[in-house]
Image (cartoon, rainbow, N blue to C red; front, side, top):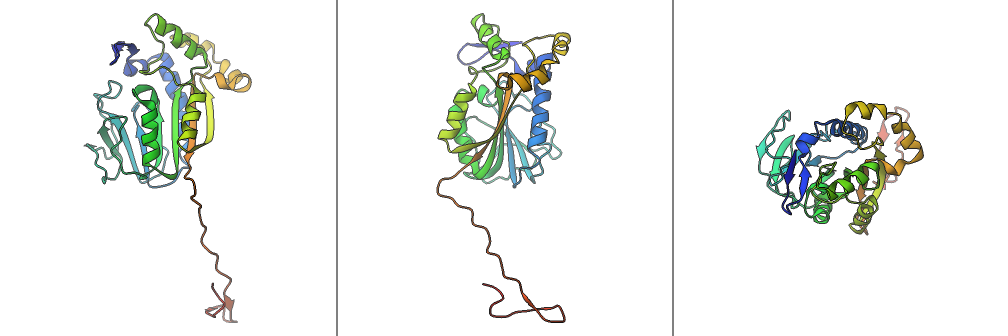
Length: 274
């Protein structure tokens, strides 16, 4: 259940934790949030970084979608993902994403600058040793006005408190290579990189319990948490938009109405269009 990271720090094996009662509870909430938010994001290229236990893009309709996994991480390797047209390949900068599995090394991303419309990071920042650098890479590959979705554990929650206590006795409750990134700190990072927060949501208000029976008994806390202490959910989802200073979207110039003759066919006149 427990593995060692590069700093000889005990962490939970994510693959095992995802199949546990709290893991299934968390992933179900996150999958539901993604299914509600990605359908209305349009473009051509969508990319999910890490966490193959969630299909973040299944409700998105972009023609080119991909899943990138960290080849050096125990979280994703070894893993085989069954896309409808799965292709195991090492991505190159000019290779389009088309429902394919891409192995690369985080935090560096092998994609062209400003080439992705939607980028989803499900707990990816918590499993890289340089989360701020990965965010800079995300900003680089996203197109102007591109969308970034981040899912993570909330340090200001019952689960976050349990994680802090567990790390002191070398038995953490949640899997993470890094210490949990505070929500306020993450917002500051995004602001510095030129992102504008579009929306955010907290969820999973039940206590840090390992038993399915006890998790079910605290089901009433979901509605109460949403109403009374929304920022204390165990997990959060942030949607941000990449803004580029000095860029202004220009709408196409409208044409004036054409002059119609009695036969209802348009006639070109010098003043018909500007």
